[in-house]
Length: 504
Image (cartoon, rainbow, N blue to C red; front, side, top):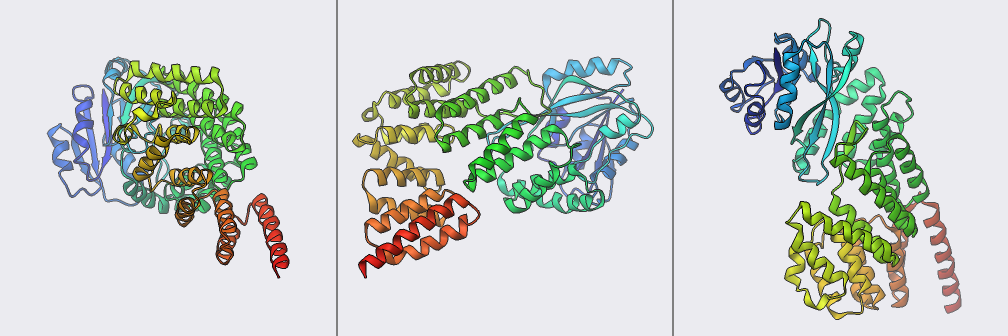
């Protein structure tokens, strides 16, 4: 007999889909409500759920354990309201239901992320036998594994898949959830000093875009040898991204290499490494790491992976990144490879066919056949950087400027497009246009020190020396911890002093 154990609050939007997915499969639904003010409880009762009230005390484990105490099945399946059992897992669950297993089962949680376009698969125990003494621990990001192992319950893998839609929320909703969890996490960390909670605090601060606090907790967590390798890998990858933003590329590379060491199956790790090699101008290594990301992403699609925390990368984005790097390097062999990979994508997604056909025309230099309206229709976050690279490679063609202007009109809020359109105009000698774009990027706190030096170059060429002090002070303020930037700034300031002496 399988009992579905749940805790809920104000989940009328999600609950019906969740319960429909286990209808006729579980024998009992135990629903603990922590204070709903909508129709959650009424929906639960429509599915025959036993509904119990529980006064919320900022403790997810307490609520989960209360739900467990009301279950009468010999097997417990636990789900959240924004989750549902995949259809192909029904037969697997029924087989386990008919057995008399005393084992607990790892299930694959497939996280749908339509907002960030970064779906992921994680592995957690979600099905386990009801044994005296087993309980959830931790006030937030609660766990059952330790209690199972302490009770000598063996944990084995299963092919059960649970689909989670909770990441398909806007940034504000995700931030609200991070704020809610943060106080509880910090309270748990103060009591336990656990690297597990340090990691999750770092994750919460990362969502809240507080990089200083996130960095501190990630660095604390990775010092503990008992922290799970996939958590160490995630921490190190995020730390690498922070260092890329500060232009500390040597340290960024060290972090991402360590991240790969802890989790070799993670395509996102390889994409971060590729980004670093692009910045240092090593196209061979950039392309190699993009190919590694693509290979590992294909393993995920075939469910052939080992990591317990797998983050998919949009395959079209990977291919566009590899093609961009190959075109910039002039590598005919790799251009052919990634074009072939791009055309293969149309076989699995017919919606890409028109988009990729237009991209092929742009790659072939047929820019005059592309209208601004067509460009707007096909441009997205996956192919954006490839399109920018193509316009730069074709900068002498009149239509390249027209199309790039169209792209800027659509993505004027995007720091990457601002930066690249500024450089595009700078290299064409359109200094006034470049200056406006660079100033806009700097006002939006662009993390690339090169943009500040390009603007300084324009001020010097236009003899606008009175505007230099402000931008020089900004470089010190924003990149004062980057020794290479400071060295370059000192050389520039020395030359400026010599110029002033010569003029006087």
